[in-house]
Figure 1 (cartoon, rainbow, N blue to C red):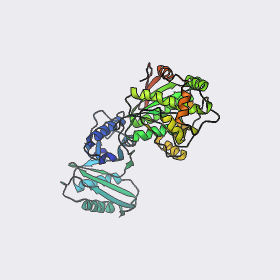
Figure 2: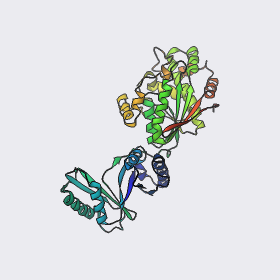
Figure 3: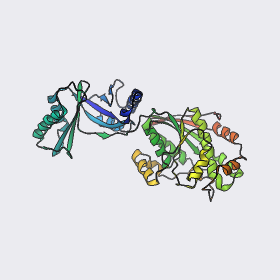
Figure 4: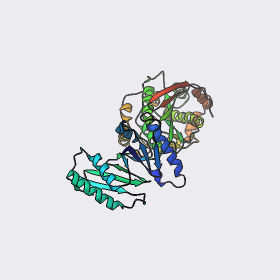
Length: 402
């Protein structure tokens, strides 16, 4: 019996003529996820609903399976064995998988896509189930069993396994294009970034900081967050943009209540320049409608007006508790809960405007040399490269606005 991991595809099974494109991307991501755990000669075979990974017997299969649960595009991950298409082989494999386990009820669940195998699924269930009940002294329970044996008869082979780990779902990262995410050290933007990865987006991160007027803590936390999120997309870029001088210029030239809105508009402009450099299709923010003063619908409209690319806000309809629940699940909560200096809290107004109009915001910006501000900001950007699981490179850049 050959040890294998069977991974089932998620929603790409619903794709039409371009399904092959999604399967190719998913296979690539599966290989990347386990590249440091298995030999380079490891075979990832199959397609059309599942991949099968042949594994040497001396490898920790549980560690590999756990790694695969973070790969977007998979509905579940199953540890089992490959056997010949023979009912006696099925019973022997099932007995071996259950050896040493404690249970009182059992169910057998057979799928037979390969119709060349002559024994129907229901008969396989009955014969294997009868054998297991006698061998282990248990009874059948088809609705809520203690143990389930799964049998898949497909492509001239058969796979037997007893457990399914829940996969990450969604679409394979890289299948939907590239986006640029404005990330802070808080809870929201890392979760928003993760949600775009789940929809197949490759996320490039941009962080605005107010060094040296704030501590470097927020930058360090953002690095940790990007490193944590990189395990979902295997490699990441993080652009670090100095923003303190821009904020000071806005403070000196603009009405106090509009400061945060003007900060956000300038951030979108700079992020969009970086997005064009990255050939990205959209921007992403962690904004939630009404959560803070700058996130009222009217203010979001005023901020959005400077962007030519779509601005995606996957958290727009969520509350903080829902966002925190996702942060716990994806592993960013413990990083984001630590105190940090937020860029937008530096030189923040006492009474921010909550219902700004585009006209008054544009009038306030007339005193600003926007092109010069963007040019200076891009000239001081640094770029850090991440790969799963470590930071690999940091570069200073000389960029120009688009």
